[in-house]
Length: 258
Image (cartoon, rainbow, N blue to C red; front, side, top):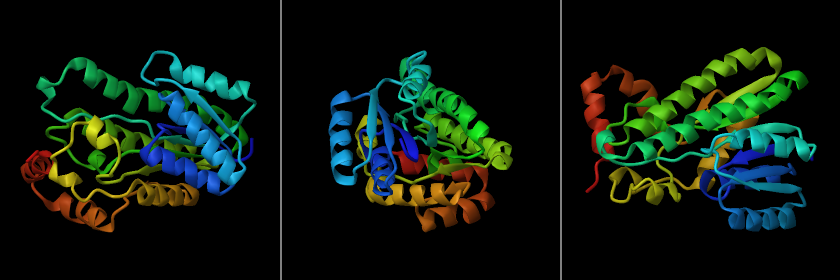
């Protein structure tokens, strides 16, 4: 398999669009998601449209041992992952104490634990080969505190910090690590995270546009990229000068429902 990319959360949204972009360059793919039927349809679409090889593996990355199973599957296919795209993630709206612990734990397991384990497994061969690219899909949520989505924001803050840390560790090994930090995006995430009625998602970006920004940043080896220049301006140049309680109040207002 040539220029092989592995994409998690590849059955819809940003993950699917990133897979399409990679296929357009002639790169082969291994797609990971929970829905086998969706993966099968995407495999046919991409192979027919771009004459690339696509393998799929239906799995829930929150389950113990699944990242290792994915790794063993890839090795069994004889593949060497050149591009690792950790896109899979879940969210959830509501006050921390009112949401069940099982939902919070699943969020931590997928957004943090699975991402770290997948990275740890696949980066070993990249280091040996002295080349490779990693794209971790974070969020602008990772650059703020998150009342009403406290755990989600915190998981994405972890992803942003983790990505920067290992980027510096791996820099001399010929490996780049990029954190994609989009603002609100129009995907299934809105319904799944119970975000209907949140004003911040009224003008959500297209996953196609966000994926293009992320894929370009991946290829260029950028460290952190935000899809919207206005968001980048606010977060990088205005937010640092605001009082902490002001930031918290504004963040809560953004996540409040009508």
